Amino acid sequence: MAPRHPYLLHEMLAVAAIHLYRLHPNDPENYQRIAQDHQARALGQFRIALSSQNANKEASALFACSALIPNYYFAAFDGPASLLFNADPLGPPEWILPIRGCAALVGEFNNPLRASWIGPVLEAYGPFWKNTILSPEGSESDHQIQSLERKLPALMSNNVDWGIYDSALAILRRCFVISEQGNDTSRKTAAMAFPSLVSNGFLEEMSQKKHPAALVIMSFWCVLLNRLDPKYWLRDDSVLKPF
Image (cartoon, rainbow, N blue to C red; front, side, top):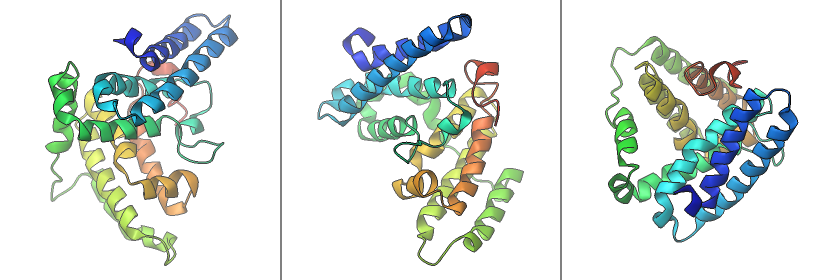
């Protein structure tokens, strides 16, 4: 499939170059340059394909590429802050926007995707969100999020839209319930679901405006990210390690 979709091919080569970068530490600049070049090409072509009128015909390739994009950034050559912020232009990091776009794509073209080879993957991840039940008793993390919900208004002015925070907290609670199922799939689902599902308004508050209340919520999301390590790829070399 990759030869038919250049963005997917470039993304695979970018991730492969990172592996080679780790295997050949005596020549890091060469593999770093190769990885960054392929990543830049992949992202540019991915965005065009995702926004085209024929995106539904490429849904499987777009989905596959969106699964690889976070891998690149989780082993990126920049510091851990690159997972959370984009310095220029100011806003969300580059890896979040593609997975948000593909989350929307899955919602829009759910049936054709489930009928494709991607179907078993969606079946593996889908039940985590659909079947997640918030216990009336709540877990320790659930109590902490509820406590956060009570304290957040003190960090807000009257002109802040509480609705976008309320929605983000509801998503965060469900993500923690999923993560606490304790396996690789549940942890990845939880960590990736939060930035995929929060509103554009909250993403702006968190990544662009850096509102204190949004950054506090972000710190809880960082806990979900931290649970991926050492379960995520590259293990000890992941940029998550400093978290």
